[in-house]
Image (cartoon, rainbow, N blue to C red; front, top):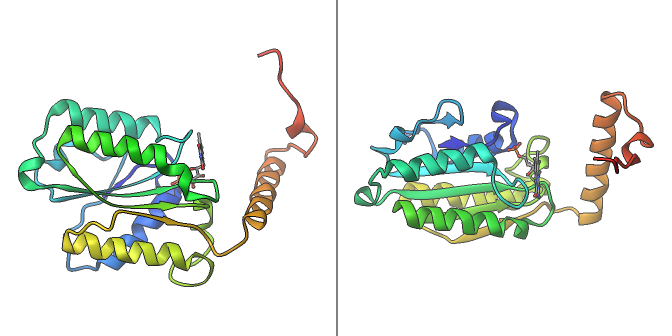
Length: 202
Ligand SMILES: Cc1cc2nc3c(=O)[nH]c(=O)nc-3n(C[C@H](O)[C@H](O)[C@H](O)COP(=O)(O)O)c2cc1C
């Protein structure tokens, strides 16, 4: 499993991977990597490769992209082992449909490398996963999708693309996100007015 977030231990991707690992159960041999510890050679003997990453600019983080390029350039023959790739992509936006370009990018990469792209979970409003339980309540849809993903990983299945979002109105999510940004601004000694300054001379 690779946590493809530059925020590593503090990331929402890690929370989602922790939940997936818990759902897969301890009977399986799972190796966890972040982008510092991962090496392409780790894939030589692997049957399943799970990547969890955030959506960055409708794509994926540059560091993850360079890891993917390295895997491709090394030409590691994963097709002999029928190695499957499972994905969890989380976005800051409420609607998980925004992940479609990133999913297309992974699909092209899997085809080039010889991986079998399997179940993908696209999580909308990913920033909530650190604050709420995935097993029930507002994020139960996301929790359920990860449980299905865990079953697919165990049984080498593919359920296609699952899109999940929280059980709260989009407007409320946007309001909460704005509160979060204001809180962060204040903790950086900025106020509401200073956030509206436009730097036109750049
Ligand atoms: C540089 C950067 C670019 C981002 N671009 C997008 C984006 O295009 N669409 C989106 O929905 N969220 C975007 N986000 C928000 C992240 O996807 C979101 O905060 C995610 O939950 C972070 O996950 P992580 O903690 O696993 O890194 C961006 C965040 C950063 C830091």
